[in-house]
Image (cartoon, rainbow, N blue to C red; front, top):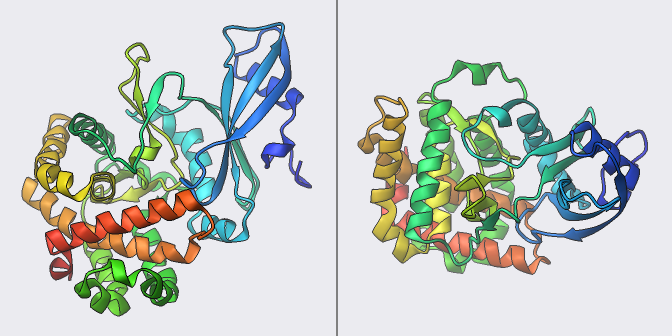
Length: 367
């Protein structure tokens, strides 16, 4: 254990007795115990501020009804990642989500067997259900089919509708404001990172974006002010294929969503734009984006939301695409260039979002 902690904050600190106690408290073990386990790192290059491992469990006696595997989430061992997590309160947000909100969301989420965090939010552990036996993990690099994209839009609209203009979100002190997170990103992080970003990746940007880069964050801060006064809902914050499990025929769910570190309250267009701009290849996005926006709006209406028109959705989508690109630029400051999967993912996101900003003429729409 890390000094002063009562829980394992690193994969190498896991113990069979602790796992046994957790599963007994969760009602998974009436008899028997965990006698051995193996850990395997997963999601390398997908997440930037955490360690995720699959835990393969051995029981004595064998217990077919007990979970054969679990997913463990821990803080990153790298200082830069911890700094990013502290700046945006990522660890405490995800722990609090599983403590307070997960049972109320319409989306299928992994069962949480244990959530622990220290007082300053720098050390934590989450012990979660392994969704891989029941579903197919999405992959952001190749993108997804039209059917998968439509399912993602319907489920996103259902999630947003359930919390649409819900004042109860304001009572959750731990739940970050998306506007505040964006102001921190564009006001504090972007000014430090845009020059080295342009030096490294400027060749992948249009002349318009390169010209706008030095002061783009100022326009994005004005956009945040504009959107903040509009409808607020529960925002996932990282709604993308790498965080999706598409259920098998007998799984009992069609879509499950993981990784709730960036959960916040704010404008739902962020989730919408993050998904469409970054999870579809440009040609596919151009063919599908307006029909997918219509599906999102229709599903909101079916679930009781009124007054959110397709015209307003389209306007927010166009403007927010520029904010997403600004977020990618700001995130360069916490980028790990030694992670090959991470580099490939970052460059793919940059290519897709840059194309979307150009196609939609998003810069011209900014305040």
